[in-house]
Image: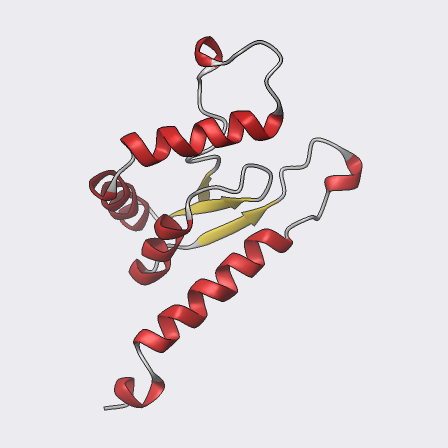
Length: 121
């Protein structure tokens, strides 16, 4: 299975950055870009293509992307997700807590939307 990584993170924006910007400042700028340009129509198109082509979407810990609402839509649609730390430093390898906490929170929310008794008939 193929995986789309960094779907809303590590965007090509070098010319837009201030010299000396920090890692977190760059990630915040990416979140603003995603909020402005990657709306629900874009998310639905990506989800459709991922399902059609059996492609997973990475939940990327270092950039904390994609946004929670996009991950929720992926879960609702049945898109496979891949958790990755994509660590660039040894001490960051395996730091995936953010992704699993997000997935647990979103799955709990989805479960409350569709309680077991309503699914059993």
